[in-house]
Length: 457
Ligand code: TRP
Image 1: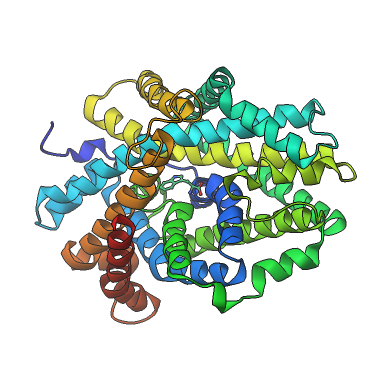
Image 2: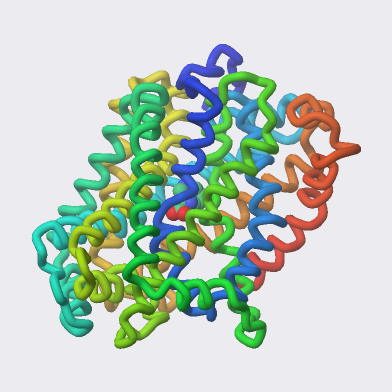
């Protein structure tokens, strides 16, 4: 491995064309299956409002401070997470071992993408199902059968997993400016439009009031220790922190003087608003149909929602819109999961980006086959009571992510050269950054340790 990081490597992967593109790209990374698929059913399982409140607190106390830290590391390092960390460790005169933040991030990103792509593939399958009217007036029993038939058919799963991986690598292969930047500037406006259309529709046909009541009235009796832990884990996942993804994206930020705090707040507010809006839309639609049992777990999106759509005015059209929205959100997240690894290999080996992306994509695709088979051939094969898919999701979200986030908070809060921090964000003795720095040093690491240890235990 090359020991000395050359400054000449800075910026070889490209720069976003504006700060606005950075905000969109970071929001695109943050808004994904976590918001559209996971948040509604986890909130459903934990009783709604009370969970939402804890989740928002976790976003404020852990999500925002670490997100800001990551973007700052990227903007200062100006390279892939691994090389940025090597450079910053040297600048701060501390051990090179801090670059493990970059290495675990790259690993976690690749592993996450392997199963993320499989679930994203489901949404593509559902776009086709609703386009071909297969979900029209579907009953709850049939909807379950349709979903189970998909999971039991490895060839279908492999097909959609392949399509999604091809989409991902074709965007990333085209580079930061022509690939990610351009795709983001098309996908994000589309995502916002689809979202508003869907929300409008849900206020018309759904039981908006019931949805609102469910999501925002809180019943503290449902607030268990488990819901707090889930809220904390989800806050990480939904903001895309803990994997160095935001270091990679921060490294492509253009002008140096833009306020990091405001940028990071914009991303967080957008991500949280979108999660809440989608949650509201989904619950209004589901509640409009009293026969649907709620908290139906991971199947909420692929089992309950098709039943609701199938029996509504213009439901088929809006089902297409909805699943397209899920697919777009997943794609704008998937590209961020592979980017740190690609950026690093481009800097380190100087290989052509599209070739690297192809090879990496193939490796991820192969690992993804494990997740595909865990729903059929290998459904009985369990490690500590978890299938391959569940183990990977646990390893990444519950272990690698909190560790990455903890190390990031510790590095920036305790080890990084203080003058560099001040150079990037401004005064940390007064004003809002003072609070950021204190929370990052004292609050976030402690809370994180608690989650990490409890989730292991
Ligand atoms: N935040 C995305 C979601 O909500 C998933 C994601 C993309 C992610 N990149 C990440 C999670 C990096 C953790 C780290 O679906």
